[in-house]
Length: 592
Image 1: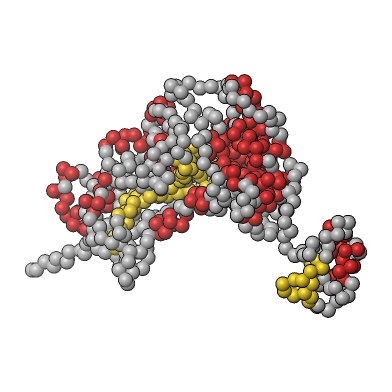
Image 2 (image 1 turned 135 degrees about the vertical axis):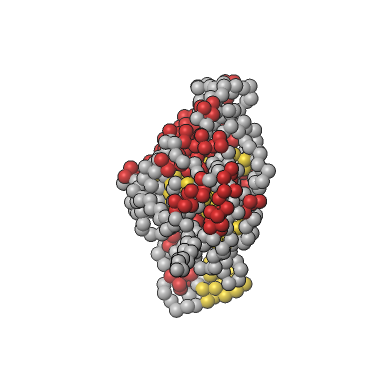
């Protein structure tokens, strides 16, 4: 009797999650005993997230452990983390969906700025940030001037103390200089016809402006002196008080958007300072480097200055990198609300993302493959990927993605769904961007936007003192944040340029000075307002011939039908009728 044997069951095209995890946990010593499992893994077909044909090419290795065994022991020890698995695995099937709820306040002014409305003036918004700073500038500038007179033998012309009104005028002129660029600072007061700009000379005498600029100071030199050999030395101490006032006020009066970005900006500076880095890859090789946290509008919510004064022993004891500490400090005011943070490979690391996730801050960014904790099987020599290939590894909520376009690009995220592995190209053979890459490109440019807008009409000029260079940059930043805060209130839309020009006029009006233009602007004034025409004592008003025909001023004022004449008053340079008594009436009657 023949026994019927059932046909062998077909191998599943997709492995269950537990089988995948079993394969991942297999040690290298058992590799020879699990050739069948490896074969089945090679037949796992990835699922497409977007149009394009997924490739059946398998990942070339199943060893998804982190880059070093030491990393697995230390990841759970960062900033009080609970120890968690450091094992990287393939993405699960069915696909995991990541949902993070945002509970922060709506974007715009905070409750501290409730009195700011759409009818508020630019100056009233700026004073939210600068009210304390104006007093600080006046006090420290006067103190520094008197100390200089005592400690130096240089003979200076006697100058009275700077007042708050003069400080407003000084700042207003400095802001205005961003709209009328001159080659030298002296050119704003020059009398050369091709460079002449009367506004500055009518607003403040050049010697007074230069005096305030020379002795502009931000802290008492004799107070809280620090030892530069001390590891705890604050290299920013000369401007620290002003800097912290702005940092506090920037975050106090504004609620940022859900999506934020961290990046660095450079303020070009070639003078002497202990914390000026040399960056050969940057266009500005010598500069003061700032780290900024900006939202989608370009508002700078928090910032910090790169100051290297030696090894940070406290940070070393916590096993934290410098970039890890920087991002943690910048995000301390947005913890617990589910904000989404984007950063580039200079900051990103698995340890940092795990640390911020514990504080309910979720991150996405490009990452360098050699970062501690990254899966070691994503190396280019191991994968040998083609254009359009995507490889994914997950560890808890953290997803590591490598995507090849012209070169391999690495991303780390804990706010997006992990994409499916495969090869994704359009009909022209171009690689299709994964959703993570597209979102990163869309959200990452917030800091660059803020820097570009702040530098559009910058008041910064060449100087050998880094404190002044940094102060003028912070001034531009405060004006930009004021503009964004006022724009968030709605109302009539105004450009950044018009906001600054209005702010200059309001600062001059507050100081009690409103400059009058020396030359008439627009259409000529009415005849009744021209008093000089009535002065006939010296007999200078005589009729003369004009080179072209012009409309009679008196006829025009009386509503007479359009009449052009060839005669004019030589002294007033006004066209007038000679045969209709217009010439006599113009020089004898107040009301035409």
